[in-house]
Image (cartoon, rainbow, N blue to C red):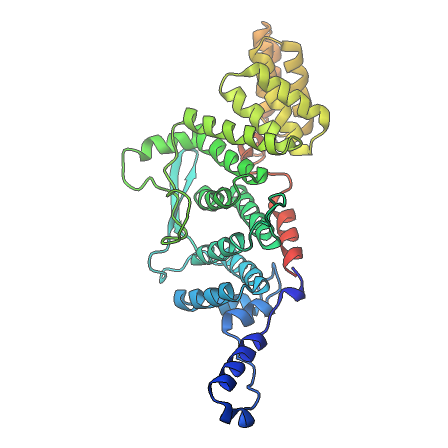
Length: 405
């Protein structure tokens, strides 16, 4: 997004002057140039803001009222001012990342914090997520397809799709799955053929199928308030279905598989989708296809985390198929890639037991109980498989900021 996207009020003032001349010729001689219309606070803050920085503009806009925001957004949409919308998108995103929710914000959506299947806390979501989402929707609906031309998004639509992808990634990295569900629902609704957004939604389904969250859902279903996600844009026309509570593990895995297969049809080179599909198939018992997908992904080369992830899936699938030598090679490779992770060693211990070598199994598990081992399990990379994307949110944010500058 360049400075050429910016538009002044000069055109609007020119139209007003011409209308005045036509209505009253006698006043034409005395007409004087009018001073430029003063920018509203939202526009001024957007122009002053430096993307990714908590600056004075972010602090200025932090307390903007809903009516003031809606008025500024409406004017920018009427004038089709892409530059102003883009700057507002980044401004509210940075404000939302800073703001953790304010008690005085009546009706702020609540979120819950879950650890190891148990509710451990709750909080309020910043209203700036709602504002940023509304701006992204406005950008996503801007422009139209050219008759006879291949369907491809306009630059503002590309920016909106990138924003939905970026925010989905940062939500999943932070474990903020409810906001991630809201965000990706709108992203896929606006861009149903974007493979990266389908991948993001599939990852969310993966997370909801996780046994730790399923344990929490099973407990929560007996009480009120399971609807973790909130409608970010109540009253908006042509919106995705109201966010629903997560389903059982089998249903969530089925939904994840459908999204991943669709993403790979749209972009066969999407390596992360292949690894995640292998995991989903492994969880669903389709171990032959899971092993083949993981093996092919490893042959094509993967970033470090996804290499470790794929080797674990290959090891699990091969072990279930009775291919113990391939499984051992995979778990050994995973242990080399993630020396502090428990999962590869547990896999190797399982293989030793399957081969009738209990002493070898104990030898694999012994380092996990060593006195010099950290008491925290934060180094267990396997537990965070749904938090990681390639590229990650930091890279996506840099691209977002580049397009807005």
